Amino acid sequence: MSEKRRTILCSSLEKIFPDTDTVETEISAYSVFKNEKTSFQFAVDAKRGERVSFSVVSPIQDALRFFYVKMIPAGTNAPKNADDYYIAKDKTEYPDLLLPLCENAFSAEYDGMNTVWVEIQANTVLPVGKHDINITVSVSDTEIPLFLTVEVLDASLPKQDLVFTNWFHTDCLAEYYGVPVFSDEYWRITENFLHRAAAYGMNCVLTPLFTPPLDTKIGGERPTVQLVDVTVTGKGRYSFGFDNLEKWLSMCDRCGIEYYEMSHLFTQWGARHAPKIMAQKDGGTVQIFGWKTRAAGKPYKRFLEQFSKAILAFIDEKGIREKCFFQISDETNKGLLRSYNKASKIVHKYFTNVRIIDALSDFKLYEKGLVETPIPANNHIEPFIGKVPELWTYYCCAQGNKYVSNRFFAMPSARNRILGAQLYKFDVKGFLHWGYNFYFLQYSKGLIDPYKVTDAGGAFYSGDSFVVYPAKDGTPYNSLRLNVFYDAFQDMLALKLLESKIGKEQTLAVLEKDLEKPITFSEYPHGAKWILETRERINRAIINAK
Image (cartoon, rainbow, N blue to C red; front, side):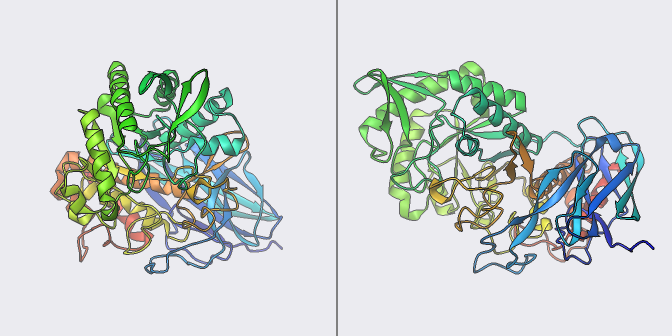
């Protein structure tokens, strides 16, 4: 007599633990657009070591990809002042890694629920119509049938016009894989990771003109990944070469990257020093600027004057000036105003007719005219709404309360995905995050194993510093957080599609139907069910508006 097995068939907005009994969003059907990339999950109760297999019959089965959802250790999960919109703040593991399944089978790693993530990859246009997906799960002598209908609607999501940059740390890749920077293997691995980033919404990349002066211990340094060749030609005189930058741009073009976030021209947190800059001098490679360089001093000013002319001529030659963003210093505040003000004046003097952005959350500092495009954190964005030429935002480890969207392990996936509706409603033009693949300890003091250390050694909250895991072959593994985040972008695009048919006011009415309070960055319905039902309502409104 076969043993009865518990199973779950649910949306991508669940985080299923081995001891999960029930979920909020069990599903039997949902709709997608022809060019959409969506996911669902199924889980089965098994004993550790048991062989689990499954078969799939569907007219769109060639578009399905399967991943085993692995539990990943968590360290620091939430700030002390965290709000209550978390799954649990004290768990030692959370479901996060999506490990590709080479065959439709796996050995259960957990006593309890073992989960398969199913992604419908619209690499080609999905055929319009209702498509059944029949899954038969086999454990020991038990077979469990699961059934889902996916309806492909006769419409396509528009092209993403939001600029999204998730800081891309090539030094972390070089260190993790043990390959020399700018070696053939370095370029291969870098392109693999960049291609994946672009496939999940990243269309702007942090471009290391010089080694980015980010999350670096004062007096310390990160591995050199400087793309610009510098030669000292005389006292205070320099020439510049762009061969590696040209190679970078070609790689970005192959990956589908459209915008370039040039690395910061001054150190983080106040612009007091120059970034590490290496140069050829007297037949050798030496460091000519860094922590010992006074940011507003004459030597670095002279350097920037010459460099600005060279880099602006280069990007004009490439025809990408309008696609480049230059930066002064990351995350300044009132206490650092004096040094930041000096740096800002230098950049504005020499880098003319370019777009200058910076993470800056104090509206009073923006009013001083220090940067054209401030990027406030999503828990400080309210004063900027309607008062800046372009609204951008970001979140990081500091955004763990006030119910703002974020992607920590301990947060529900719905809190990750709600961002799409917020970006749409407030017409946000750009979104920034600092950690696509930061595999270092805080201040870049050393390398971590991202499969074991997920909080940068206790400095950040697990899930903040990276959204992909490094596979042995030099390719990335997705986290479920990356897929859910991309779903947020697709929600945003669906709303834009609806707006093109019925206008913004009516689209917001569809989005906020029956809500007691309008959506803000900290006010919105909690839970996955509302998001899924709202997305179906948006989809139907698009089709009915034809």
